[in-house]
Length: 231
Image 1: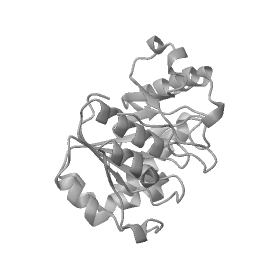
Image 2: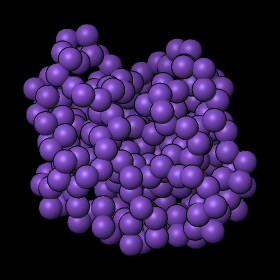
Image 3: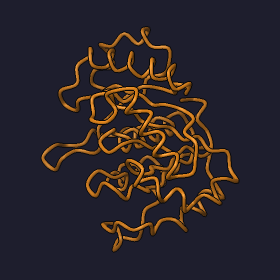
């Protein structure tokens, strides 16, 4: 994670958990002293978006680029001009949460001219416990669809093996084995995996050949309290 600098675009299928990953990656890097901004381009999922966590992120000093208040529930690519400006003047780490599936990647194509002039990392979040990405074939098909729609190239994998509240340590180990093998199959580097912060002390991180990003859940149903984010 330490090597992720400049513009990082996070993509993945619906339900992969890429927005939660984006939020926690922003928090992790901010805590490491990196200047971080994050842009919400998720036009697919109207419920779990980066913008929902904008208050705790702002309290940490992380700028969240979202539409004006009256447009917060609009499913339109109204962020494009704002994000284009953000791309032209990126911070040390500029994260773009690009939405799910190939449909969510369409807005990236609209930003193509700006993005092609920059060095961009586009990372695919893979949760092997979700439909369509439980096999190598499914993951590679999703990669192909996103690349064709966005007109960009995915150049890394993030393993986000979880079953939300039912996640067990064995799920993390098995999920790592899957994405590690997928990395070899796809010839894409495995940048990092995730694990619930509540389980991290019990996990043998020596089993992994990549960093582990602790997840402090922010995108939760109304009846569950989000994890508090400390500086």
